[in-house]
Image 1 (cartoon, each protein chain N blue to C red):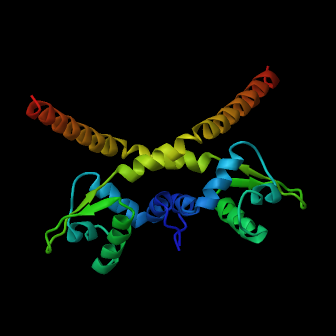
Image 2 (image 1 turned 180 degrees about the vertical axis):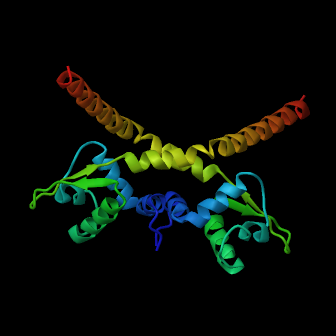
Image 3 (image 1 turned 30 degrees about the horizontal axis):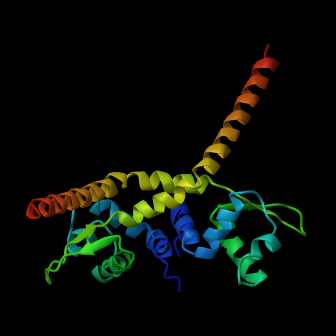
Length: 114
Length: 114
C-alpha cells in the first residue's frame, strides 16, 4: 500500500470515471445524484469513486448530511504538474528528434523527385 | 481492469520506486542492475516495475538479451501534461483565493496593531 501523497493522487487519477467526475466538478460543485447521472454506474459505485478522490485530496465534500455536494480541490494536480515539469525537456527533445527525422525524410523525397 | 492509455500511465506513476526509476532514466539509459542499485528491493521486483512502466509506454528496453538497457519514453508524460492543463485555472484560482485571504488577514493585523 503506497500512501505518499503523489502516489495517492496518481492512483486516484488512474480511472476514467474518476477523471470524468473531476472534469464535471471543474465546472462547479455537484451532488452524488448529479455526478451519477451521466454514467452507467450505480450510486454506490460513484460514492466509492468519490471516497478515493476525497482520500487523495482531489475533492472536498459539503457537511450537509443529505446532499454532501462535492467540490474540486485542485492543489494535488498542481503537485502533479510540478513533478511533470522535470520531464518536459525529455518529451520536447523526443518530439524535436521526430521533427528532424520527418524533415530529413521530406528533404530526401524532395531531392529524389527533382 | 482499466486499459485506456491515460489510466495505464497514471497507474504506472502511482508508485515511488517506479517514479524514482523514471527520474534515473531521465539522465540516460540504464541496465536493471544499475537501476536496482539505489533501492532496497530485489532484482525481480525491479524487473516487475520495469514491466509496468514498459506496458504504459514510459520506457523502452534494448534488444540485448543480457543487459536490455531501459530508456525513458516521455510521450505518455506529455499526454498527462495536456490532460492536466485543463485544470491549471482551477489550481491557480484556488491559490489566488488563498493569497487574497492571507493578505486580508495581514491587513487586519496591521490595522489592529496601530
